[in-house]
Image (cartoon, rainbow, N blue to C red; front, top):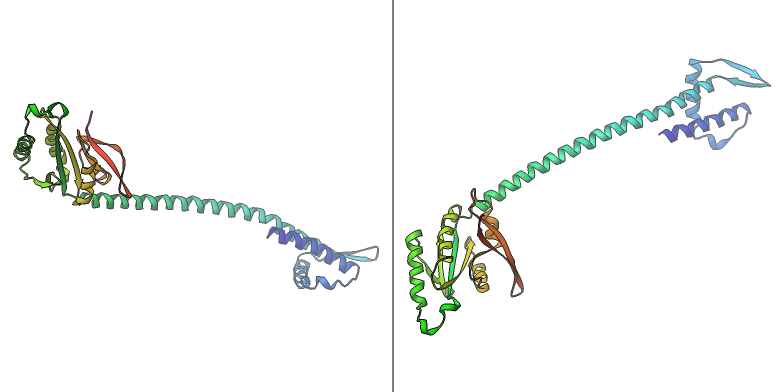
Length: 265
């Protein structure tokens, strides 16, 4: 708009020259009606005219030029106001956007927490093997008898009956929020003085296929789990254990991210 008014000032000067010289520039016909209206208006404000070397100078042209100049410069104020409004709009928009994102993130987080805490069932599998120093035949250690002693201890402490699963034992539980108390017992098994090594796997929910993958990795001496179980554990209100990543392993054409439980230092 500022450029338009500056062009109008230049055209008005040419229109004035045209009238002073009594010329007829047809190319100015497109804007002549506007200038005639403007000059008619400014003539009511200031109609003085004088003769100079045979040419009649009408001060209404000066008035029109002053009006157009004022309007052109007033565009600076309009630009400033528009910039202020734009700045206020952008700041308000940014605040609203951040507020909306915060609300959405909080809602999304609450939904995740609610969804994860709905997962209460979980399974723990135990597979055993003789420790190398006890594997000599002359020691005559009965692994089946050791397994019975292990199961007897777990049954007494947790009141849960095992089932045979993948050549090991499977224990099912229904309160994931209480898993720390269960882990306490399985850590006692893991660090017992029995002549056995233990590969203990935890799986939240009922995904037995993923549990089979964990079992196949044979992480003896650890209580391992997949990433989804580690994620579920984070939503428990209390934690007596921490989780750390063991690694990412190839399983067929897929990978599985494995973590383990560790006692908090």
